[in-house]
Image (tube, rainbow, N blue to C red; front, side):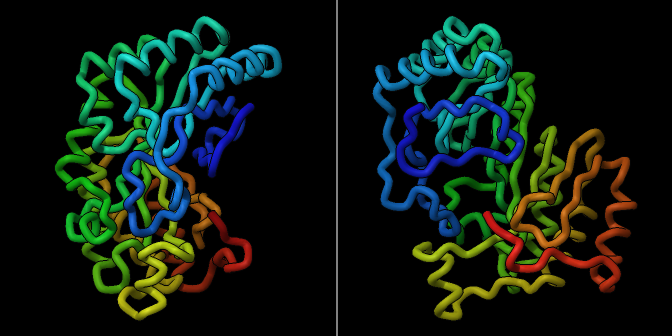
Length: 289
């Protein structure tokens, strides 16, 4: 398989075929992200993709899921994306589930009919980075979208019957906006109503604007207890049923995997126990991206 640059996939796609069809990210301006810095966004040569599909057809017959990389495959125009999914179906007929990243802009560019067409061709899950529900934080991180636009994009995905996984970032508001970020994010998630919520913790990456702001004292990350407090407030403000909430990414200090609202109270108790020092936190040397 041909992989160019940095290839990122969600943890839940560990056992999927990873087919890289774009390189980089169409937005690539988020202050906290260093994955694609210096990597111009581009579509891969169709001939290279065809060779990868032939390789997958020979070597990955036991895999029934496929993840399309990189950072925002959904930005591919419909007249190019539909033939790609049709080709996947023709060459890998045993693949039943296709997943990809989609940001607010690329989702907004698709019509409801577009999304339904992609769903019929196998697209069953979109991973979307909300990061924060607070417009001040979204603007500061150069996310390129407002909370209302995030909500509208999420609803469009859900109305098409496609599974939506939303990612949020603990600590992205800094100490100054921590509570504001947590409350707004919980409330926006409630309106987005994703099928899955994944909470990660900000880990500054050298060379990014966020890292520079931290080095020069313009941004202060909450400490471990501050991050736990932020997580607690965020959960308190999520009003959803039948949604998977996961904070078990390697970046987090307290791994969590629960079902809301069924496990909400028990999860809040667990966070309180960690805040009181009764549950050990993940040491820094074991955390990572």
